[in-house]
Length: 616
Image (cartoon, rainbow, N blue to C red; front, side, top):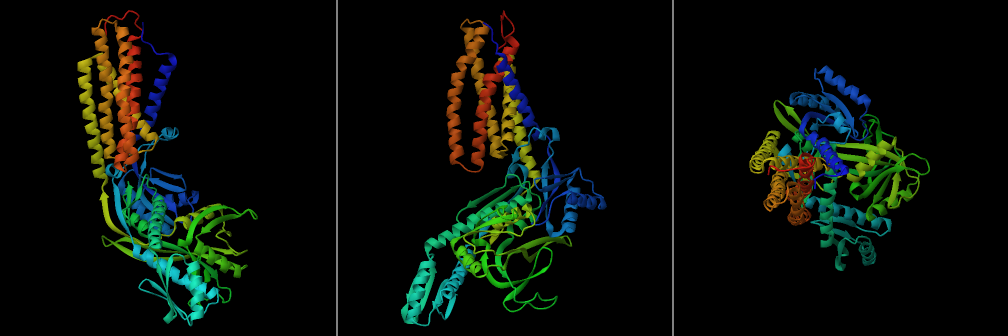
């Protein structure tokens, strides 16, 4: 009896190990300090911008390692952080508001490895450094905005249904509608109860007064929506920074945690996260001429400017605001083949839009983007934050028919612009203001220290195990150590292939996996020793040792694997990371212990027909 694998099994083991090396390698090449440019709205990231950036860097005497364009972003790599910081300041100043300039760390994986799709693992905040924000959603502001909206809706409903009223006011959270007589009081009561279902309506007949308060159900819904919408908006804004694997999740009822691993420019991150933006739909004022420079806009209108800085006169009355947009998607107009954006409104917004567009077919309607943003600049060695308000007409389109809940916006120059506008409509507005109540920065040096400690602890453990195994099991100890190395290699490769985020608990999971993997090799080696002591030949002892140890290894690993699955399903954050590493480590350890070490043993002893003695 000889121990030999069939050819296909040897080829499979070799192929898995080669793939493991390819996909684990990117983790050893480190990262380049980089400056990332992403376009804001109508701006473009193209070859023209690349030439402009290179000329700006040349003029400043800065040499970039590479200027790359990928996924509509430009990445300028540098050899050191000093050049990176200087370039960021120059590009931020010279490119203006058309582009978002952010500091980042870019993997320096060679192009030949990237051709295989090999990428390094993401590192969590505790290993890579970065910033941690705790944002408080201003729920009072969200409720107040909703009350204002209900007051405006009540006013519009009464006017559209030709019900006379004396006043519609909001006092201490109560919307008060004062009617002239009991007849209009009853009409208004029926109308408001039917249309404004989120309000609790109380009638004071003696005063011809209707009072509306937000119901508890409506308040809870407003707060829930505010947090959910803000999370969506923040996630899209974080994408502008190009942060890999950001953590954006709700904490409690009114707080949001944002963790940005690898982000060094804290001020820029705060500017983007803290900015509040909204959208407004307004009719273009066709009755009055556009006022000349220095002249005031006529009563009832407001003068805006579009992206080309051309003046546009719009009516002050707002049709719909951005927080009433529930969905938006870009596409192509079926009739003209032109780029279009398909917008879906909530019920209240849909009714208002439908009524106004029915009465104004043929007129132009504008989309106004309003953003309150803060800007941080270094003045006299200190960082000074200033706030500014941006109001810009981003689109003007002709109303061709009455709009329903879902309608389309045309008149866009390109499909790229349509996609940008759809993204803006979906995620451009925060449903409620947010305040940063906690800010922590984890420096790259601390993250590097954590990585060094993690690698050292795993390395020391590996060396200690290797020395023990080789001294105790001799040749079979060497096979076990090589199999253990293969296990770590495959584990890193699988985590890289899945683009998992490695954190400190994940490093602990790797250490635990190394310990568990050696258990399997110890079981195999002890079984072989038992067979030899029972008088089996070396070939028979090797065969029986692996076969009998397999069931024990499988039993013990299955129970641990089930526990890991339970941890992954029920846990969160670092616990899930630990569970993921544990589960993957169990699979790779079984492969390496059963197949890799057996292949090595077969390769060493399997070719010897008369095997007299083995070193175990």
